[in-house]
Length: 189
Image 1 (cartoon, rainbow, N blue to C red):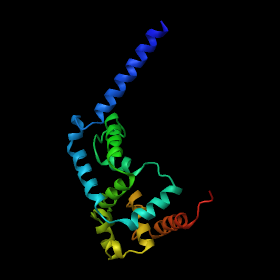
Image 2 (cartoon, rainbow, N blue to C red; image 1 turned 180 degrees about the vertical axis):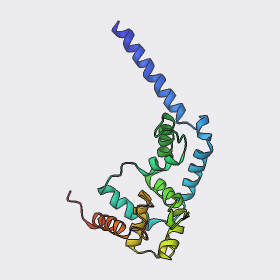
Image 3 (cartoon, rainbow, N blue to C red; image 1 turned 30 degrees about the horizontal axis):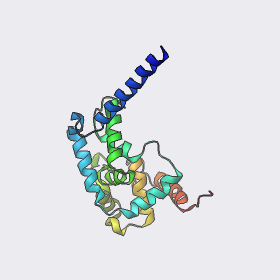
Image 4 (cartoon, rainbow, N blue to C red; image 1 turned 120 degrees about the horizontal axis):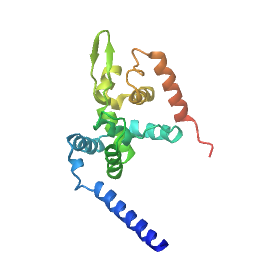
């Protein structure tokens, strides 16, 4: 009797493992979703970008302050279904992205594809990516930004309207000071 249940359990585990392997393979139809294909294409393009100033700072800060969502998880938020906060499909999208890309690759994707919205009066100006945001907020190319400006744009990734350096100067300054403190304090391990 025990052997029978053990065989059944092992069979179910094997079937589950095969099913998960299939769902994470390139043969699955869901990875042909236009949004997923776009995400993977843009992430591959982001790998080629030189964003070392941003990634080095982000990696140092991230070791001290874990975010609720990793960059790959946040990148998959750009893929539907949008009607639910979370679904099994999104889980597989996230797992597939994490298998193919590093967290740094996903962070670069976010830097290049986040909408750094700018609100002025009744107008909203869409500023896509860190390059346009750098030009808009600081009138500089990204390779000319100083550390505080880089930290400002990293803070804006979390919430572009809350950390808007023109509308919410004090909120941004306090966030940048926190990030600077985290960046320059040594671990005591």
